[in-house]
Image 1 (cartoon, one colour):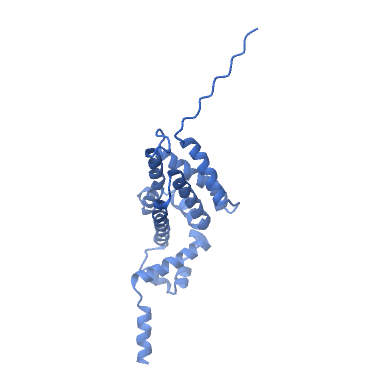
Image 2 (cartoon, one colour):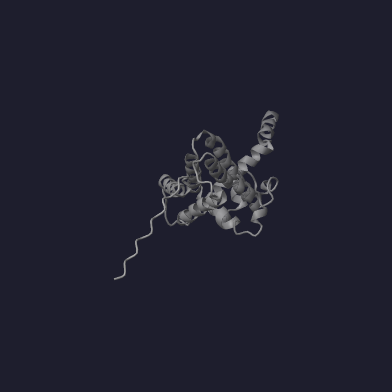
Length: 220
């Protein structure tokens, strides 16, 4: 009997990092399934194999928990970019990857995307949050790519990298909003190609030919 009790105590004493990871994994599942408003701490605790009160040893409340879930999402996307982008040649190809990656992230995680777009962005204190800081870090890859293309002579030198960034993310979020509302779908590959082609036509460093003025009609 003593051996059984000792074994039980060892199993329950998981490292804090492991316990937090289990809670975050359970919370991610529940937030995906229920959304933020309908998710409950009790359901998250049950899925993590804990009693409800144990959650508050690691997270202050439900909002603190959803913030940590979104932070982990952003950190994962940033890590993926840091792994993939250095191996891609050419600014145009890197830009296409950044566009594809964001579209794919929305396609794979519509629940988290909705939370960021509708729950956190409108918050007056959003710019003071870690989510805002991570979003700035995540989207800065586009401005870096545009500057790289300008320095390499691949893109025009008279464009604003921050404007290109805003065009990309504004376009993607507007285009995917019907999908996030459950009213449609989109093809990640085709959409990434279409946005990249449109942008790169404007970014092409070769000057656009100036159209000749239409000849004036002679007065009779």
